Amino acid sequence: MNKWIMTVDDSASVRQMISFTLHEAGYNVIEACDGKDALAKLSNQKVDMVVTDLNMPNMDGIGLIKELRKKTEYRFIPIIMLTTESQIEKKAEGKAAGATGWIVKPFNPEQLLSVTKKVLGC
Image 1 (tube, one colour):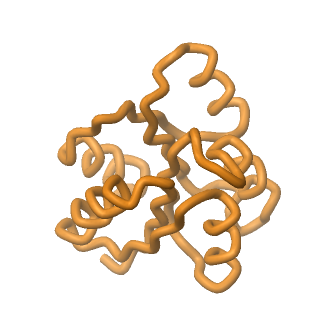
Image 2 (cartoon, one colour; image 1 turned 180 degrees about the vertical axis):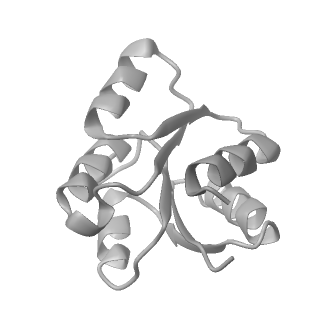
């Protein structure tokens, strides 16, 4: 499969759960603890998809999405918000920034894999 996915969350346990779920399905995973960490790591590694939390220190998920969408190589990749936030206003803000989809925590591993397969087309 050789698809690379970045997971961005300030909770180490959430990153580990996402990474484990994706690794078990055959994906390669890079972890970042916030938006700034993600941007730094993405300068050295191209990914096929990003799964990001909304509320994080240093740079939140909306800020990260906006920064990624400015970059040619990340303009059209899938970016999934995985967050505890479920308000319509927050979802609209995410969509306006360029989020591809939204999953509310706590997440079901099968749901994450289903969304991943759908947006990556595999």
